[in-house]
Image (tube, rainbow, N blue to C red; front, side):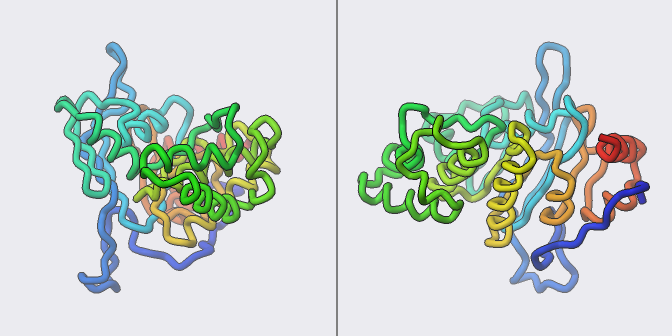
Length: 279
């Protein structure tokens, strides 16, 4: 156990770990994979950022990806919905399959990205639209909902993230935490199969970050499949079904959060966790 490392307990019932079957679960009841990456490699020039990485996330599970800066975590996450095009490998999201190097039509790309909603470090809200309009916009364009239908669904989602009173406000009139919660509502509006979070609290002060983490905890409790790149160790330990530690473009260790945090087996994992504790 890393000295000073708090013990983590889960707030929700445990499900089968990412990419694994529980011995206590019947075959018919086992979760099905929603995301599967096979041998994903991405390089810039001669520098390999993601090195033949594979992962599998079952329906309803939460995978937290942690590790030092520059490890390739965000690049890997962006490969899931092809915001970054991998140089090699295979991506499967829900029922969408893309092999690197093969042409991908705009229709297929849009369908895959609809299935993999993404929340970024920056909020990326349209500044000239109200919070309600930001959440409704993609529903009208992508799902072809009427304005009334989109707004009704948007108000439901805003209520779920605690922003009912901000529906008619513009982003600049909202705190960073409120803008990030609006961004989560916007991603949820397209009814994705999996939610991707890229350091969603890194641009927020601790108090506002807690607002966003509370929404993410509720999503996990509601059964949303999630892949979260984060430095929030408490969140990773208490919410994730599995933690994967990434360094130098590869997963160096992965498994149950309690085991990884309290008894890491890889020296680089121990070094990273010590560095986090000493901040």
